Every structure is written in structure tokens, then in C-alpha cells.
Length: 241
Image (cartoon, rainbow, N blue to C red; front, side, top):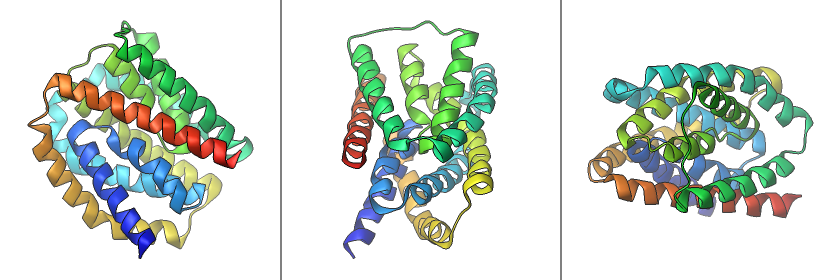
């Protein structure tokens, strides 16, 4: 009962964040799902539910997508996805989580100190590649996108729409890659099925919240989510190393 309640809270809160911000699900859900499931199970559950969320929301916000930026992210991720699955299969994932958590917190502190970065085609490609690597290795494509788009002062509507469109591609490719190279099991699909009603409740609530978010509050929420993700990954990697 306790584990089930925790699972419900994780999925519901993460879905609300995803719908209201465009990036909250994997950042919120993955570190906590890893406490309840095996790494392969947690990552695939996260990917399946994130894919469902992206499909559900994309038609409503497609007009705000930056398609030029989206194409660059996709191009970079095509290179990153196989690298990520190689890391997942062969390397120490907890060491990767430790490195990602430290880098995530450092870059977030730079953003809080008003650090800015200029968007270029090459940087867009690199960010897409890093996101692809993190999707298939630890199930978290959001942090590099969020850090980059926040540092370039991307408007919240365009940020949400473009990241969701990218997730639609990257999660589909990553799920196929995960299944081919690491397999899947009944726990993953049953848990995902049980979570779908919670996802749609969270999406409904998140859409309401999005209308009330101003740009400044959106930025503060972004910092909180990034720092939380960094701390969660850090604590998890230190416990398991």
C-alpha cells in the first residue's frame, strides 16, 4: 500500500509539472521511480508515460513549436541515442548520474546568477545530442534542454511546445532502442497501464496551472526543478556507488 501510494504521488505530480511547464515529468519522476523499480524498469516506465503525455499535448500547442530549433535537436539526438544505450549497457550508470548531478547543479547556479548563452546551430545540435544520450542512459532528456533554453531566454510557451515536440521523437526512438538492446517485462507495461489515468488527471490540472504562470515564476520553478533533480541524482548515485 505504501509503495502504491508513493507511485501515485510521483506520477500525478510529475504529470502536472509536465503539462504546466513542458519538462517536469522525467526530472521529477525518474529519480523517484528508481527508488521503486529496477533501473531498466524505471527508465522504460518513464519513457512510455512521457511518450503518452507528448502525444496528448502536442496538437494543442503545435503552433508555438520552433521547428528550426526542433530539427537541430532531433539531428543531435540521432547521434546521442546510440551512445546513451552503449553507456547504459556497458558503463557504471551511477558514476554517470553522479557526474550529471554535479554538472546540473553547477549550471543551474550559473543560471541563477544570470548567466546567459547565445543560441547557435552548433550549440542546438550539441544540446540535442546530450539529451539523446541522457534519454537512453538514465531516462532524463529534459535537463540539458531546460538549461539551454532558459539560458537563451526562450519564452515559456515556445519552450514548452518545442521540448514536448522533441520528446515525442526522442522517447519513441529511445523506447524502441531500450527494448531491442535491454528487453522489457510485464512489470513495466502493467505499471505504465495503471499510471495512465493518473497521467491524464495531472495533464488536466497542469493545463489550468499553466494559464496562471507568469514568466518570472516560470523561471523560478525551473531553477527549483533543476536543483531538485541534481540533488536527487547525487543522493542516489552516492548511495549506490
